[in-house]
Image 1 (cartoon, rainbow, N blue to C red):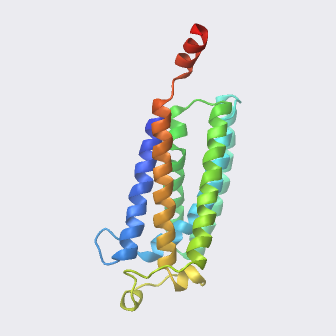
Image 2 (image 1 turned 45 degrees about the horizontal axis):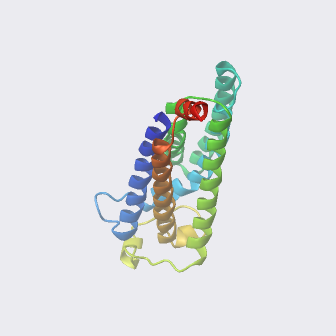
Image 3 (image 1 turned 90 degrees about the horizontal axis):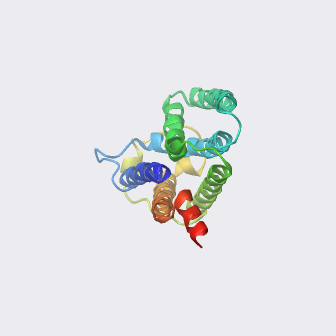
Length: 214
């Protein structure tokens, strides 16, 4: 039940983030919209978040002693902090650094709330990673090569947008906003589905009692 609650919280965060991407895409002048530059950086840093959450989640779910797992996670966290810090320095903003830790905390929330290491927790971390990678790759390629409407990012709106760098996401930022909308929206719905399944599934004790009765 604890893990399901964590998934519901994470799903709510993802769906709210998807809504912000959608609002920024359709109505960038809205008070609920965020700067387009911020949203582009957030999707870039999500790629690192997907990798780090898999590594940290798998390590934390291991069957080593708590002290060993804490030391390992601490070292890995330090390395990721250096990587993301360098990324932030390159763009001259703290947005990627802060975004990385917020996104990572949300991804690892259900595992931290449940707090039970073991093979099942490790499989759960691996499944979550595989799904996130698939969503990210399909979303990135799909919104890069398929037609995506500008919606609210008209030529007039684009005059106030200054995204650093080059490439299709910089030249046509509505694509990354569509990507974020789909990525976090679908991811949030899948997390809700997982939570509902966990709530309806029998606990280990109940399953053992059923087997014994049979």
